[in-house]
Amino acid sequence: MSRLLEAFGTPQRALEASVADREQVGLPRSVATALDQPHDAITADIEWLDAAANRHLITREDPRYPPRLREIPNPPPVLFALGDPEVLSLPQIAIVGSRSPTPQGAEHAFGFGRSLAARGLTVTSGLALGVDGQAHRGALAAGGLTVAVCGTGLDRVYPAAHRDLAHAIAEEGVLLSEWPPGTPPKAEHFPRRNRIISGLSLGVLVVEAATESGSLITARDAMEQNREVFAIPGSIHNVLARGCHRLIREGATLVETAEDVLAPLSGQLNWTPGAATPAPEPSPSPDGYDADYQQLLAALGDAPASLDQLVDRTGLTVEAVSSMLLVLELDGVIAPSSGGLFMRLSSAH
Image (cartoon, rainbow, N blue to C red; front, side, top):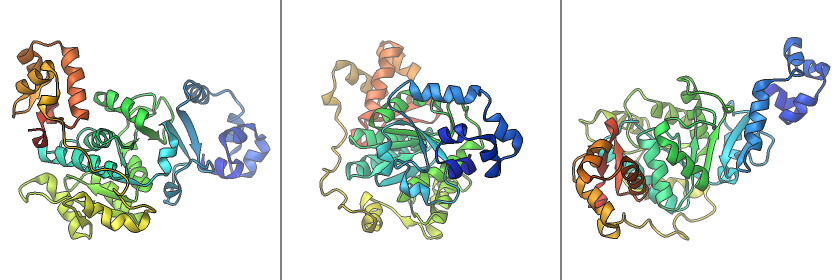
């Protein structure tokens, strides 16, 4: 794919080229000939792209291709985008971490996502459960922009639990993948996705990570790409803090506030973070919700609870509780926890 695009500029020109021209750029004759045959996968890709105005195919020669991503080793030859591709050229900060964070880790991810988005940075992550999802939600709660780099084709959402979140991101940012529509989740795709997350960004903030985790792969990619790396310290008894502690020992910037992230990046920005953007509003109090929401929050209490438990405690339908939980997540009042549970965030008390 890379060789064809370097030689012909666009997929369309590569398909229109003669077999001899394709061979001249180094393709085996069998491959050069096969491109003249009808191909179901190519047809399916074109049909997906043509089905909606917010679906895009971006090659490295396209002016919409993110300039920072073009600089990394082995940049993706093409990107599929769902949403607004112009977001990809804005200054971005990646936030990554554990898929099963502690309640404090989930709160940190949401809070930093919201605060950094409110100060004008686009928040980039991988749409995974845990820290990734919370970072995206924080950015959306601030009315900011967010980019989700996916390890599947954009015609499916993985994990399925983030379907509503993915739709919200497509409305207020962009979903991105180097994989064509129809590509299922595969283990080997996610480490490859990580280089894109870091490559798009000015820096990578690691919230919680074990010593062997995908988040540390993203941090290593960031170091190799000459990006800033930030890490939030934690308790010495928290195994999910050990990856962050290792990064700090290796030279990552220790982070306690959003300003700890913004200060090292200020020289790469042509604006002052936060100068034209108000700080994020605090999470809404329960008094701001109607009776059903107040009943749900009372049922949740101070301990994590499952969807079924909340339905039993409130007497509301599964559909109503699910919808209300999503609103409360986006408002920063609750967060998903491990095991399919939901918890109140301390800032909402």
